[in-house]
Image (cartoon, rainbow, N blue to C red; front, side):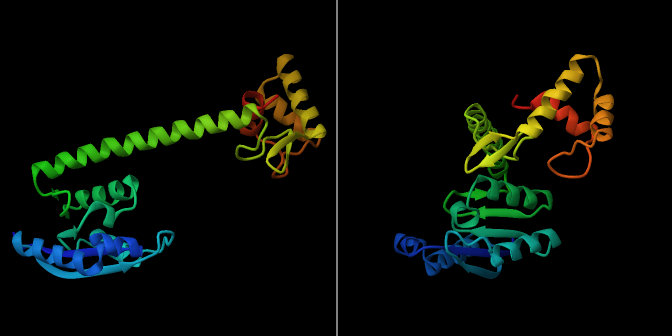
Length: 224
């Protein structure tokens, strides 16, 4: 095969060092793998980071190589040493796939240059989609719960103010919300209500005037 690849090594805690995830251990595994698979190893990029450090210079440097197509592949000891979650792994490995750059993970026996590797990509894609949908469902459940308890659940809705973690009614804004719903009940459309509000100097929480989209939101999603 004789492809030019780069290795990537990451250690973030002393505990990982003791569990055989040391820099030296990972480097040796990558060197042995490249020799066995006839991969030309250009360099091994080492990253030592704390678990909360988001500035991964080595990781970002490799992604730039991928975008520039200046390498043929990336070799890591394990998936956990490359990305920190499914999203990290999927986004980066799918980027490599689009640029015909192979990804090799020794511990999981992943090689995206063959059919099994491509099968793995399909599984990862499904897991990524599942995680996104589950996260969306959890967020929706939390927001619905907070909304039912009149707690802050995002941008403070018109008609309410924030008091610590709770929503309390703003009498002036709430009066206006009831007014626009009254106008809607009398047959006014969104454009007419918007003009009415601006003509009578009603103000949104942000900005100087109301727009149709904001009025439509108040009519459909207000807590009242």
